[in-house]
Length: 427
Ligand code: HAM
Image (cartoon, rainbow, N blue to C red; front, side, top):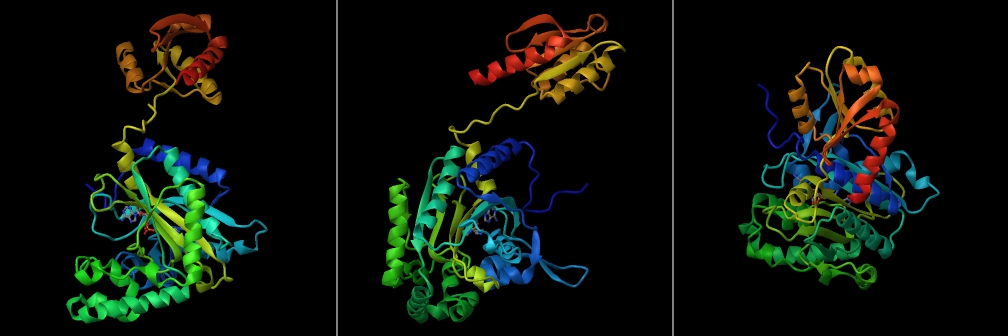
């Protein structure tokens, strides 16, 4: 028997959580004027090397890479931003008259990481990316979009941690300061860190091997390397967040594990212990150089992504979120030869009008069909036997009110609609 690959899951019982999240994503995205974009699940490997970064854990250790039959180097996308930026450039979306240009996405990402609580090899993200403005108000609005999404799914206990890496000058200054700080301890650090020291010093900070080394724990604070302009920019982002009443914690240790960030970076951390070490349910920031770096016109941009598996895990343990019971509206219970085509025709008509129906396909007894109606959580049961066929009627049982009446098929649709509307109002 085949089994699923390590680190992957079949979503069956939890599908209702994903539907609720997806509904909120589409809804909130419209409010913030984001358009949906769907990019391929695989891209040229080079795209991720040049964006997420060669020295990052994601690219150096976690990508699913393969050579296709045309001898191309291909990677299953480990994140969504690189593909969106590639699509932005390739489709010349920068030429749009709308400004800023805002896109959101939902879909699977793939990272070959050690599976554990909150960490899988295929996981889903909801992300949003806004292009064309370096205004700090856009950073704040992007964060507000993320916060509004969390509010829509009633996820509480999430804290926004925020920091700034600054632009080129500040980043270069920070790298210098960090290198000077790490240098005396270089011999004690792992081989990867020693290489990173030369090639991409910032990545030393996400080393899992040396995470507890004093030199890394006491690493200098990026905020202290910011130029005056970059400090002002960060203060302005915070001012806009304050204006919207969005709470945050300035976290000077936050640098994020992807290379493309400039200026504002942030993460949404769950306060509960439910996710073990994987408390980050989402993260993002500004990436003002990436579009140009990948061959497009210089275009500032900012965005974030949430991990849906982590969010589902939290929602399942939350008292604030209740999943709506998924049942059918009507079970058509049939008895006798003539009832079958009659029931199927009726179901076809009712379904065309928006009623969710089920009926029997196994010639089951009446008792067994009643059981089926219960398994399907049917709100109503229509009993159809010879007599009902003769009279063009059904015997309608209201399973909630525990009542029963004979109804002409001509009136059935209207009566069901009325009662279902009434249910909705009372809900
Ligand atoms: P990231 O922090 O690498 O950022 O991932 C975002 C979220 O995806 C994480 O906070 C986490 O919830 C989820 N996630 C990551 N890896 C796994 C995993 N192995 N299993 C389960 N969930 C996971 C990005 O991907 C950036 N592209 C975000 C961004 C968009 N920055 C700017 N725009």
